[in-house]
Image (cartoon, rainbow, N blue to C red; front, side, top):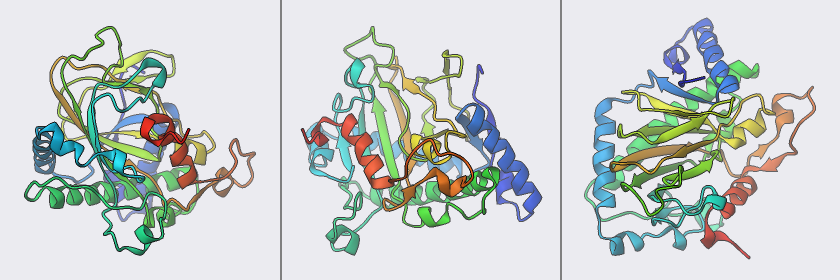
Length: 315
């Protein structure tokens, strides 16, 4: 593999079962062989992405003091602002030279799940920017809708009921994450100074970039290849949770971000299932020997986040 494959979602929107299955087969092939692919024909207009990056730049241009008022360090639910060097996706290589802002399912403080302390169900932090919250929540929902279609394709490819993932996604806890990579950085010798080599945690990631290069993916031969932006397409990749759930049939793939020479923005939508969901390969493949024991998704996600953020380290 020297470049990422392109997978169209068009067939999965079809009313014809044969067309949906054909599209699912192509999707499944990319998930098995690469774990990373461009996703086209998703139905989100280019104008939405243009507004998204304008809003992202507007937020990150705020004074640091204003952003710090929304710090993720105040949240037990992975919401809010992450300052430069506060994240270590590859702890052995050091801190990442980027800043981020995380948005989750938008719940009020008096919502029963928030009051009950349900894992990863909490309030969002919002900057004082007119219309910003509403546009972010609209984009959040558009990505969630695309993710549900993709999961119907997974179910068809894996040979289970097309709605297998519908229940776990009913109360999903996705994270919409805006990212800003300033040019350069203090460590010019580190190849992954923008974002350390890592795999993603959840089921899938839908990534949009502003066109500035930086993302690199490691292929099965151990070579790092560039993943430049394709106009109109998402970069989509399999996360570790779905790899675990599929008993390693689908593969998560290491990736990293170089410190860009020019300012770079990207927006990632991490689709993560209901925190109470039991991630159990036996549900998908009852006749196979599972490679992993069942685990509640909330416990799995907490383990991964604790290793990434110092402020979550209970030790």
